[in-house]
Every structure is written in structure tokens, then in C-alpha cells.
Image 1: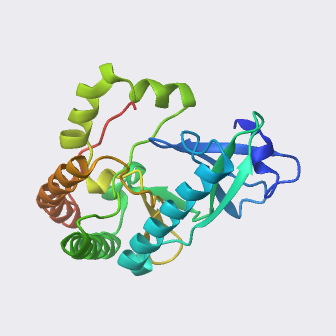
Image 2: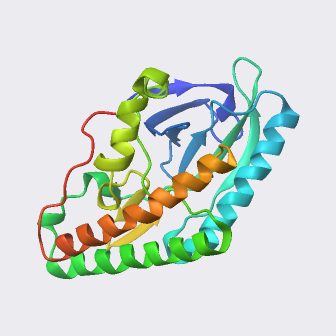
Length: 242
């Protein structure tokens, strides 16, 4: 268990220290001491208050769109601006803690009951349908896959240009919907899948067009994997190291 202390946490946590529980492509993820909320820090955004506020409005608008799209598979997101130890204004996102839950990446599907696999298969197909409906309407969709990072250093290394071939291989081949980092399975009672990342793709219009087109094509592969999972087969493991 690793704790980090920062004035960023002042609006949420009295002792300014939180446990780091994960990280993504652009985000550090922490858990409050009472284990009620997940706190996400967009470390590569922000700067001045004006810039951070504009970016926060952008992120919140995308989150509302994606949450409306996914309906029962979504979580509420709350945005605030806070200053870090260096005096930079940063965007902080707060979500209710979805635990006890597991990322689909870590889920052992073979150990589930047939009825539980059937529920997950139905939910995943519905998530795909909802995402495609949004894609047809707006040309975008939520990131259902995600990528994990074990530290700030690792995240920085993975974003470097010399890691581009590995990132492309991971994007096109290794990652699949049933080994998602962004979809969590809440395991109390009937299994329920929820999305935990609501960030838009912040790249050029051409990049986004290609990105979402490829995602649309990869859904055909995911449908096949869902069928295999539903019948009790093993689901390929995504990348073992980030």
C-alpha cells in the first residue's frame, strides 16, 4: 500500500494523504481513507485556473454524454479544480467507490457459474450496442478498454515515441473487451458491469475518426470472445506488463 500526500487532496481528505490504487494512460487514481470515493488526478492537464476550468468543462460534457449512453453501466463523476504542491491548478475527478469489484482484466471467467457468465455476456453485448448507437449519432464512443500503469514513471515511459509499436500491438491485438481495465464487475449479488473511465479522446479529428473506426471493427472480435466466454471457454489474457 503506497500513500501520496498533496495539497490537491485538501477538499476531500484532511490529512492530505491518499492510497494510490492504480493509474491509466493520463490519470493517477487514489482511494479516500474511508474507502467511499475514488479520486482521479489528471496530472497532464491543467496549469492555470482558467485552462484547468476550460478542460474540466470539456471532460464533464464528455462524461455526461458517455454516462447517458451507458445508462445502468455508468457511475456519477464530479469535477473540481485544486492546486497541487507546486501551485499548479489541476483537475480532480471524484467517483463513488465501486468495490467490491474487479476489473474485467483480472476476472477469472472459468470460475464463474454459467448463470453469472450469461449475465455478463448479456451486459457486455448491451454495452456494445449502446456504444455503437452513440457512434452512429456522434462519431464517438466511451473508451471501454483502457490501459493500466503501475507508476508515474511507467506511464511516462509507455507514452514515449519509442514505445509506439508496442502500444499499437496492444491496441490492435492484445487488448479486448473481456480483459478491459476500464470496465469493472461488481461482484456483490448479481454481477453488474460499470465503466470507470469517461475521458474523451483528445486528439485531432482525423485521429479520432480512425480510432473509433478501428474500435468499431474490433467489436466483431469482442462478440466472438463473449460467445466463447458464455460457453465456458478461456478468455485470452491481455498484456501482462504495461
